[in-house]
Image (spheres, rainbow, N blue to C red):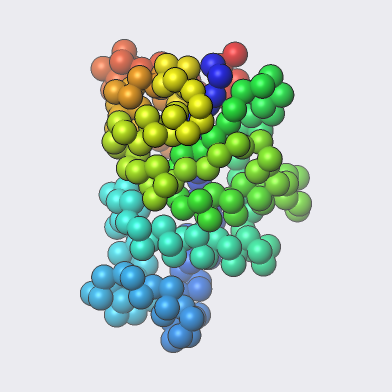
Length: 218
């Protein structure tokens, strides 16, 4: 494996922060500017906005206006210390081992690059402090600079920019549709089956390699 592209994003407690901000700052012109791109019928009040966001999240809809709002809120929440990024215990040690062995690590996420940079700047360390792990990654991709995560061409573009043939790149994800698209591009794809993920069918488990932890990989 000469390069690895990962989707490790987790919302943490950002949804709670969003709810508080929406209710407390609804009449603030600055907040209204942030949500101006949302459909008009979702902007009647804070509860309607939150209900719309929850619906998008449940249906896994990658709306650009939601990602823009997410990025702005993360910048504020992380910068003020209200947010810290939780990661599974196996993630950082394995990323460091891969990096130290000469592998190129990149992120491809539906979250904006701005959100990614905030996310990886404030990794929860010992409960009270945070750690910046951005130096572990050589590149960041989102649906703006790479394309849809469900399109084969997005993975081909990323591999080309990383300077690797698709067959020499490994993509880790928990989304079966993304796995299908990456595989179609010739990328070796592994599904990460974490607690709380949607159950994988027997057919999916036969089609793709499946791991529970990053430490399951060499």
